Length: 159
Ligand SMILES: [Cu+2]
Image (cartoon, rainbow, N blue to C red; front, side, top):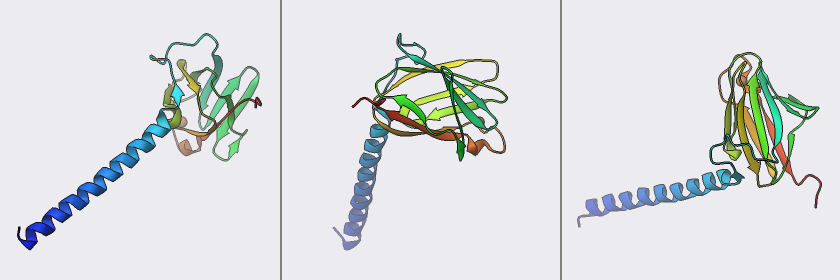
């Protein structure tokens, strides 16, 4: 093989090696961030012991109501992370007060439109402790970026 041909093959193998390593690292990352949440197969089935949380989007805040407790998240103005208990079933009933919003919790694999006058339902079960980011992913006005916050999955005080 000519020196030129050797150089070409080395470049080819070098680039291929970088792409393969990058693919393996990325697939492992995505897998570790999405495979931790058990969900009913159709996302619409409400498990029998599910805790219902009413989620309301409005310009520009997310409100989560559990029983008579309300948590809100609007950027730096918030009531603290939404506390959930690990290995417990939850059902979000999502609606909006004004325009269409879209709640995404990437690491839960949960996404739901928030539509005025309509309720969307999504069930999930967090299976790993930790802090999980959520945000609005439908551009809904000037301060759209403020519709973000955290969910804190704990063992509910049990040790
Ligand atoms: Cu929004």
